[in-house]
Image 1 (tube, rainbow, N blue to C red):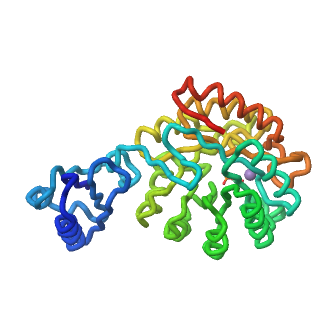
Image 2: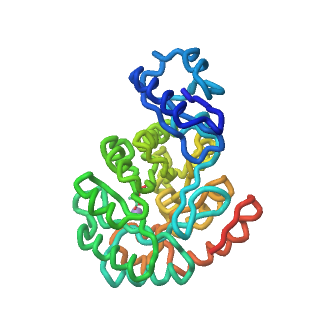
Image 3: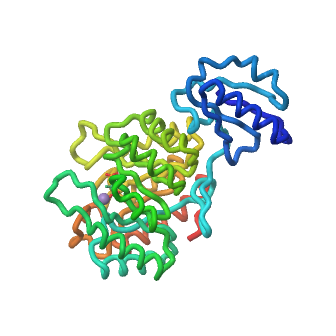
Amino acid sequence: MLILLELDAPRKDIENLKSKIILHGCTPHEIPGSSKLAIGITGPTSNLNEDEFHLMSSVQEVVRVTKKYKLVSRQMKNEDTVIEFDNAKIGGRELTIIAGPCSVESREQIFEIAGQLKDMGIKFMRAGAYKPRSSPYSFQGLKEKGVEYLAEVKAEFGIKIVTELISTSYLDEIASIADIIQIGARNMMNFNLLEEAGKTMKPILLKRGMSATVEDLLLSAEYILAQNNYNVILCERGIRTFETSTRNTLDLNAVPVIKKHSHLPILVDPSHGIGIWDKVPAMCLASIAAGADGLIVEVHSNPENALSDGYQSLTPQNFKQMLNKIKQLAPIVDRTFSL
Ligand code: PEP
Ligand code: MN
């Protein structure tokens, strides 16, 4: 349920309303960034009587939210969510590019790629220190050492760090250096991990599970917003289908569908989506044309020697060419792109 109040509603009316909601066993959420003063209600809302709220002072409208997900829905908040950083924003008209290697492999490797990305004007670098690999015998990441190198590279270049959290055991360690905490496809439905990551109040990049529907993804995001953390960025990264000629099937349908149902920004990861480096640029352009708010792309200084996902990684040179094409495409789809 959503309650819209007069914009100049006195604080005591808002607090009275919240107390009444809590009295009925539900949870009130003041919806941030909305042009209207809005209180979202989650919990057993079928117990609530709309008329009771209509009678309260400052209340303008009471709306039943029909979707299973509530706080992530456009019904609760119509305006697009824009996540603000000191020198960047995610969401809104400006496109965002997150780029970097799949994994942190060594101090030299991460410093080299960070320098190359920084020179291109990239503000967000991705790189995993803890890697969730399909095989237990594959490289699992440099773990604590990887986190240490990420901290060093962040201090040296001022580049923002996007890195994956695979377990609550590493929460403090990852939260201490990550500007954005990535939750990977394999953990999209690890609800406890979502709640604990959400409680840090850090921006969370939530990747779609490989067998998850759009509704599943939005319900997972709801777990984070339910912690009052609205800084969630969704990510389409391909799903499993019968098709075997590509690593996954990049479901670009999800982009306009999510835009319709949710106010959260959505990025696309064409690297994991198609899994073949020379096909990645085409899918980057397609993602932006479909309405994505930006991309997360794997870029490696030396892909043939990468310890994970080298085959789908762009060289810095190929990545730069792709960025030039995005620059040309942006105004055609009414976006800005200022690298
Ligand atoms: C990654 O970003 O390197 C990764 C493991 O992605 P996903 O969780 O989408 O497989
Ligand atoms: Mn990867």
